[in-house]
Image 1 (cartoon, one colour):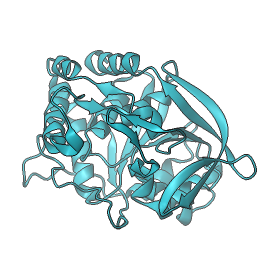
Image 2 (cartoon, helix red, strand yellow):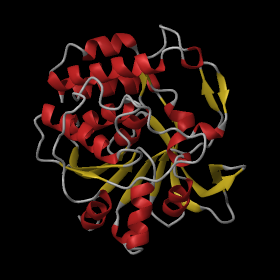
Image 3 (cartoon, helix red, strand yellow):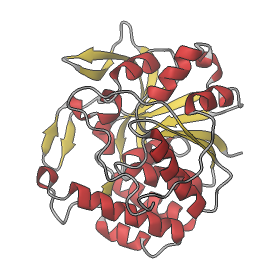
Length: 305
């Protein structure tokens, strides 16, 4: 039986959210029940998700705009290009009248339901505040976020504050991830090793309407990030941060996972995930990935699913 899944996402900025949505749609082992959005203009993000679902012929999946909070100083989760390559400037797409927090609460009792949060923890924290018993009802949460080892990028070691998802809503992250939910972390120190090459993006371009829509979003993302931090033309088309998190809900063959006692806390002004034997809660942590194998798996799934 396919895994019932809710995707909670800040889709529209980094292209990896759209790539994660496509994977959830195309993998036969995932039954995507709904999409909820966080961060910035949550309605526009919901319209982006709904448009992709319409292109994929899946207008039956509910999309709900969720909650948004003001990010801390220096954090910029809304870049301004959201929707380019997919929606016309004044195009409006009808999404659910129900808010994302209400959807999470209503779906939490579905047997085996899981939530993949590939954006901020805002919706989940709001749902817990509204109904703390969600901890007992919700099956499992997969979190794209956290840092448990040095973040080694092509340009050297990045600081733990690179963890965008947890640090754009620190209060939400602390509330949600310390609540006692059963959590699997797919951390930034692992997901940085999941490049989608430009050759793979070109192969995606030859696919169906959904695949072509994804490549338009990849093209926008590459334009937006051109010249940022010395980005070179030979760099990957995208990093599959969020697709890896979604994939780990159904297939762990590309990763190593360890159980660890984890505490989430503020440290020097940023949200950090700590291995804490004294007070940490048991959690699953992805510690490594075969990035090359995973990117091929992702591409094959989206092209042929």
